[in-house]
Image 1: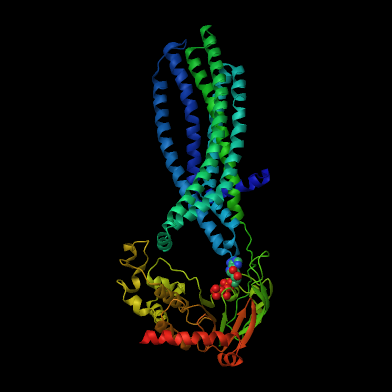
Image 2: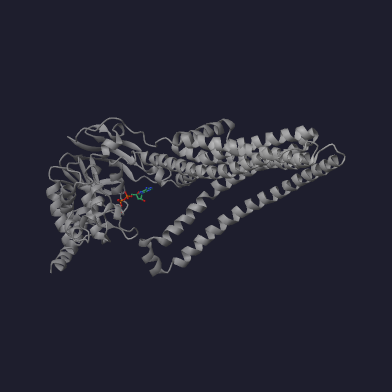
Length: 607
Ligand SMILES: Nc1ncnc2c1ncn2[C@@H]1O[C@H](COP(=O)(O)OP(=O)(O)OP(=O)(O)O)[C@@H](O)[C@H]1O
């Protein structure tokens, strides 16, 4: 991982800007404290020298002020250290929270889904999360450390020069390799962090799987827990081996450089002792000299470490900036969609998920007419859910157009478009929230409107099961979170798969008057009676509304105004149920097989 100086400068500006804009007062306080903590050791060394000379040297005299000065400086050192630690922690928390907020706001602002399906993006996002949480603060602390160690260095170098200038040169030269080594190691550490990102993400996957409630039953029944744990350990071992190898290299290098520093310090000490013996230095001078040589060495090492820390932070902050600055893969339109009047048209739509994948939709042309219910049927993988995703503009067609009353979806503002569409997705979300909130999420403006929530629940036939929960609609639907007493929620409960599906349907029905209602397998998990009841209600609810229905249970679609049969991305049959049955094609064959089975199922259920 490397970056041009100009890129590093831009990142430094952005990272510092993040810290300063989040907490300007804390940054100012932190800098002031850094100046004090940088000056205190030099002042202590200087006053110690004066004290010793007043006690033993040629300038013997009263020691009250050096003693009081030392006491005051020691107290200042302790207090500023604590204040600095507290400020640093506060600054880290606020900056990290602001960085995370910006990052997730950015991810949420991506119009389409393609980035959330890219492994590279997930690696980048993980790095960005890590860098956003630590890099701005590391950079600030690195800079403050630079100032502090610079002051320390300048103070001790001045002291050394005052006592015996020639010794200052080797003291500084001996520390130069440390600077170089620290910067090299910073790059090695940054490279390691980047290269380990996929491995760490894989480990998180195994950890998540091993603690996931839904996965737990299959893992236990199939006895795959040991296998998954072994894989997790293997991934952890690989990450550890890579980290150990870098740590070992760093330790070896530091050992070697420490040896050089010792030789220089030892030689300087011998020379100073010799000068003191011949009376060219006082005992106080020797004390200041020892402190100054060690101080210069420490100052240079701190300077190098601070520089390296800042450098590493800047290298990693690149990932954060890449995500924050990433362009939307779909160009969001700006036109507000008007209320649907004529319908939605697919005009020769071709689509594949990426250029290396096969075509999923191959020249689809059809219209969802205003006020009509259109059904889409087809085998697994025929492309039905893909049509839904294109209608919600999660992706753009690779070729062709989708038109909303004649206007290309690409020209419409995606947020306003989606505000007019409601859908039950095949993979719906089970929010660990209350039952009311689970439904209210369908229209946030009515999140607390209990009348609308219960009406939507009634339409989806979810009102019975939800009202019967221990806390009714205020019951938390979760197994992994406790009820929240502050939100006056005291009860938790778990729903069955079919009950969850009704809740998801109620969520889609929250919006009073969507322009397009999409139901992708809304009743796949329901028993025959519930399915029948829900479809009867939905039929009334859909009347006069534009809707797209997808289901493998063809009897639930027979009332649709038009049925489209999709086969490998192409429409092979179109027409109302009766026409398709009369035509004796694929649809008729499938319906014949299913209706016999469904009759038996319903009889058994009712009986
Ligand atoms: N995010 C994706 N990335 C790449 N390929 C995908 C993605 N989603 C779906 N596909 C592929 O697109 C094809 C059509 O999938 P789609 O989900 O649209 O089918 P479907 O008709 O809804 O199937 P089912 O009846 O099983 O729900 C499948 O081959 C699938 O593998």
